[in-house]
Amino acid sequence: MKDKSVSLDVENARNLTMEQLSSMFISTCLYKKLLSRGHHILLGARGQGKTALFRMLAFEGFRTLAKNDSWAEDILSEKKFIGIYLPTKLEWVQSLTYVNNGHLSENEAFRWKFNLSSCIAFIDTALACIEEYGGDRREVILKEMEFSSSVASIWQLGTGCDTLEIVASRLRKVGYQWQVAVTKMSMFGLSLKDVISDDLQAPMSVFATNAFSPLKQSIDILARLLDFPKTTSWLLCIDEAEYMTGEQQCIINTFMRGAPENLFIKIATMPFSHYTLETDFPEAPLRPGNDFEYLMMDKEMKYISDGRAKNPDSDFSDVELQFGEQLLDRVISTCYPDCNSSWRTLEKMFGRSVLLDNAVDADWSQDSMYMRLFRQYASPSYVARAEELLSKEGPRTKFKNEVSRKIRGTLLLRENKDVCIGHKKSSIYSGGKVVLRCAENNPRMFIRIINSMLRYIKEGAQPLVGVKKQEEVLVDLARNFHNQIKSYQVVGPDLYRLVETIGKRFQRELYEKPLTGDVLQSIEIDEKYLSDDKNVKLIRAAIQYGVFYPNDVSQINYGSDAKLEGTYHLSYSFCPLFRLQPRMGKAINMEDILMPRKQSRHEGSKSLLNEQMTFEFEEDGV
Picture (tube, one colour):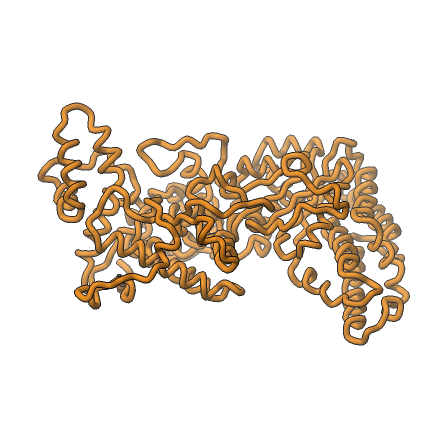
């Protein structure tokens, strides 16, 4: 087929155009929880979609969503919610440390910069609102001129501001001049009054006022101009708050505590990165569940409806599969706009998975393939137990629960290792459910996998992407993710070694010992291991970067009072690299994993600790 694909750069949703983002966005329950009256702090690992959610909460994104969703269209027409997207960029948060003299504290500089940045962010929102609610083209132009002149006056930006583009340009100029001023203060030990130019003095004083005051004034002007009802709720969506210090977050908490009754704060940050509940008033800290609500991406982000029940014969919930199917459909529609609509399913694109798809018709009779593999790889006691269950008359429910469901995939992996020798190629890590599972409910990872697969589509093939090529792509992405960890600040090398140690320990358990129904594949983290602050930082980083995931999402707490103790598993994205079953297994204590291995003198070069299994691929992959 002719290559008409358009690969998406998904390293950060901030880099996508609004058209690209809205074309792939799925409005989940979490999105609707955020689109509400109330303060929220959203906690999620890198790549889970926090920025995408917040950009689509902004009015510029929401109005694109309303074109296809009737519930959003109703909200839009009634002017219920107007969102403002404010990325707290690393460069301007870090730049505040230049302010180091007694004339302007770092906290005062942060308030100033926050006020300025929120007003710059509001310009895009205001323009979208005027275009949506301003009337015909002539009325829109007149209202933009009126609003531009009004906000330029209250922000003291000078004359000649008759478009919002000019207003935004003046605001950015003020920000640049301010940065030059504070840099001079830092370099030459000057006072604030010595470095501020005449044209900066007026706006400098405006944005040094109480928090939200400049933004609130501009909101009031726009609301009057467009006849917004008093019930309209304004949502200030502050993204990437992990770059702030605890003191700066204390200021945001104070903003949240004293926000006007129709202005609601939404904060997105990484797990464990809402550092404090304190406000500027020591006697009045924030109270979760009262002043605001924590929302956890791991719990909420993949659900399209409130139903979470799993089919007892499947590791996947219906809504999890539905989310994957919808996201696949959106990505393929964007990358291959002219493709056949029948392509847009996990099974059509990738086929069924021998590891994860339901095998209700699997033959476990005495002379079957599965029983042959079972007798070859399982422990004698486990084989005896299975034989006993098979000998009983009636439904084989206990056999299915205690034997076939648990061990079928691991038997196939053991056999796969033994038969894929020399130049024989493996395809066991393939199929729609394996692709979805290796993405670990991380939209960025899922889109990256799809992007990598699309170039290998062969029209008319079943599945469209060859199964051996699928495995090659998944192994390469897993290896890249593992190598990428080395570059993470502070913890990178230690986290890289930890992943390797855990992966190879689980690998030995799976391939070097007789199989039981409880293959080790989870990690238990307890207070003893966490008594070392270095270990605490390492585990927090593993969760923040999507390297570890909790086994029980109902117990998640990533807030300011979070505890790390619990059971976790390595991201399923590593399974193709370490040749593991992409599902949870029995847990082993972290200290036992890290304990030096006593190697038998007979093991020699067979040890998987020193020699990882490798599966080579031909250039065409199939």
